[in-house]
Image 1 (cartoon, helix red, strand yellow):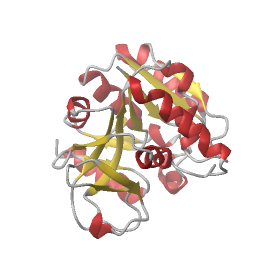
Image 2 (spheres, one colour):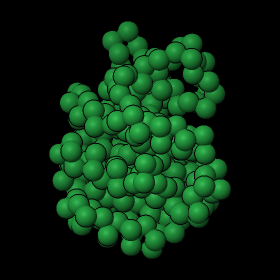
Image 3 (tube, one colour):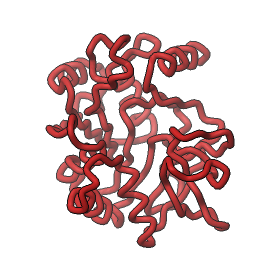
Image 4 (cartoon, one colour):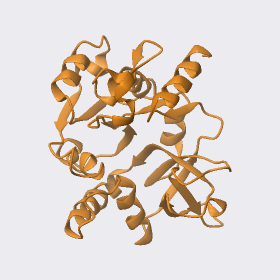
Length: 243
């Protein structure tokens, strides 16, 4: 199984505390996020990691080369040269050749998660799986998920009314081999229809609307947080201090 880490973004809301580093290199508890994501991938049995670079690509490549971990030593890098003018769907699209039609898990590069998240995602029935924190109290910013009576995903976006959502998609998903080509074809289709500022979740939702089966991996109770700004970083530091 391969893991794709989307690490092209700068993270403008973190610029004041990042020192100009790529977002995924921001330290949490004195360890950069990308180090932690590689470690979590290895713990879950992932045998190859693909890192999508963009902003400060050389700095990220140099950093990963120095990580003392077997999975980091054989990391594959692909570059998104449109990270500043395309939505993050394009970061996933540029990984197509490296994936080579095989199953993969996709990890957002600004994610901190404990060791229980990926095993839940890997254990869930496929062919498409989204890690979802099932909870109430969401607002406009959360990437929300709606399901049918059987738990199949019907809708994935930030626009939906929070009251109809089962929970929040946390930025971790699995795509099995049979769904690999449809995913990348749909990512390309976003360019064809002019939706070039979209998140990769838009491609997933369009596939769901076309009948592709996506399941929920319930990660409620797992520790995780995305790190978008200084407040998120403070929360993340508290999280690792408690572990």
